[in-house]
Amino acid sequence: MSEANQSAAAEAPLRLLLVEDSKFDAKLIQTYLRSADAPRGLEISHASRLQDGVDHLKAHHCDCVLLDLGLPDGEGVDNIEAILGAAPDVAIVVLTGLKNDKVATSALQQGAQDYICLLYTSQS
Image (cartoon, rainbow, N blue to C red; front, side, top):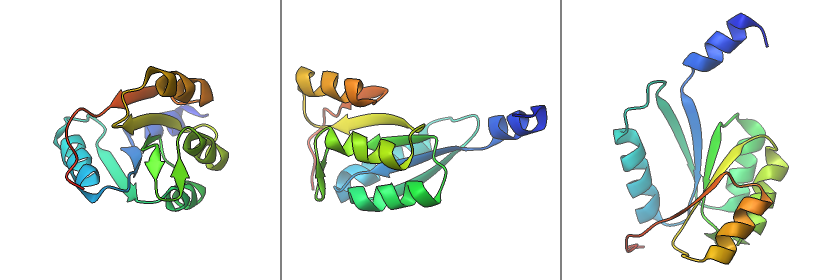
């Protein structure tokens, strides 16, 4: 990558894709992220189904996917494989209400960079 391209990439906003079917959780997460002081800024897209997230990744560059493991059309760590199939180099952070060490370990082994257990009660 040329120096000019590296500079442009360093100044571009961080592009996040949130794949979450709960409207309440999606709104809460987006509100929280938008309140963060991100030096580059954030562009947040949202998909409520796994296939919509995959389609988005095929059409748009994203730096990171925030991925729920329990979606209407995808369940568990198979969701990670689907996302990586569409965008092999994207970073994935699993966001879930499941507090399960085995699932967390499996998610990391499948290619997620992190696994975050959401500790609030969903209103969905």
